[in-house]
Image (tube, rainbow, N blue to C red; front, side, top):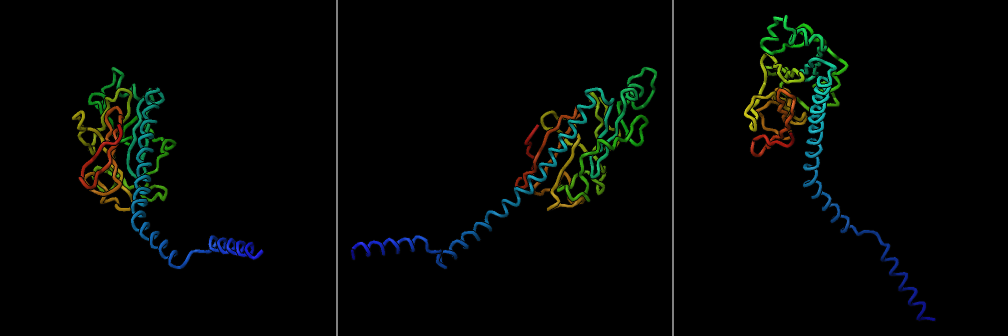
Length: 240
């Protein structure tokens, strides 16, 4: 009987030990480990989140350009102009107006002879299409995490694309271009920077910040995506 009581007491003590809380020393060790983890991991996690936010807007812009190109290819518009900048603008030209300006044999337009387009608000036949201005890259837009280049702080202040089926029409005014290393052709360029470490003045092609991306856009609106390698101060192609 006494032996059984001793066994029961031993079991009770073991259960008490098993359910006993952490000691102060153990808690301090856990807190120290968490502190070290936070110091090491948090900057990396924060940087990853910031980069993901910028990259998301980069690919939204790529999709936007492709959507406008598809509309022209389908014949919905004769030409579409995208003015890439903060508070971007979209102008469309009907197939009939495009024919009258660029294809009608009786037309003696300089736009036709030079295969060029002007700003949509200056060239007859274009109409501002606000319903297509769904992409918001505004400096004042709290939903946007990017600054873009070109912008109002630079010259030119935008990247202007004149989208046609055959890619034969070029924007006639000053363009910010880059040379495609694969084709050695001049292509339009548009740069994205994070609002976390740049402003409109510092976000530009030859800057060297984390979370920078660049689009190279050829005359057929084929888009290549580059990311800035800050350590090497060079652009690395990641898509296209």
